[in-house]
Amino acid sequence: MSEQSPVITLDGPGGAGKGTLAGLLSDWLGWSLLDSGALYRLVGLSALRAGLSADKAVDIEAAAALARALDVQFLAEAGAQRIELAGEDVTETIRQDEIAQAASQWAAQPVVREALLTRQRTFAGSPGLIADGRDMGTVIFPDADLKIFVTASAEERARRRYDQLSATDETANLSRIYREIVDRDTRDASREASPLKPADDAYVIDTTGDNVATSSRKVRDLVVAKGWLAD
Ligand code: C5P
Image (cartoon, rainbow, N blue to C red; front, side, top):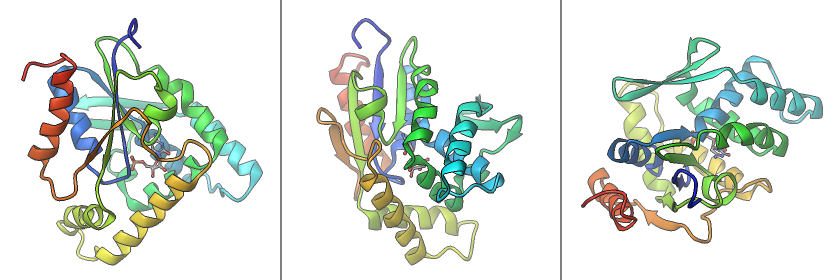
């Protein structure tokens, strides 16, 4: 991508810390952000509301049509991002685990992925882009300037999600969260269309046992080595 605006891809399984690292990178560099998982979650939410089933061919086409027509706005607000779907604030709604599972089911459908492809590429632009997802470095931006694959053990990712949920939800259950994480990883990594995997030229960062300061230091070192940031 040498003549175009630079792109950093951050791929990896859910709960590995990509979102936090992407936000930090965007703050440090002043580049924009693509949260591609949010697009799949919006498809999941829209398809659930439309009562679509991933087992029916006609519904798969309908979900792809929903994906093409998504009326989404990503709004930067007080250091956080607000996501609106046709004017409705769905920022919290799409973070629910039920929506994550729906997103992962529709994300396995090649026509749904195809429907989101061009929209994702249009996020690239000056001064640069941080693209967060599963296939950013392998499929959407194969010529990205820096590719990072962020991972952590399923046990640790489940524990992080449990700690986050149990603060507000007393029914949060660690073993159920763990099972959902393993199910989603398995589906995302074993699908034929753009499976979750590191690009051959990605730097792999395992955040198991790391706090945010440690993992962000590893990412910062890569960006400093590129000359995009002073140490
Ligand atoms: O990253 P997040 O947890 O929001 O992603 C939700 C789901 O969307 C993932 O489990 C995955 O199935 C799908 N996804 C994808 N490709 C991307 C981003 C997300 O398949 N680039």
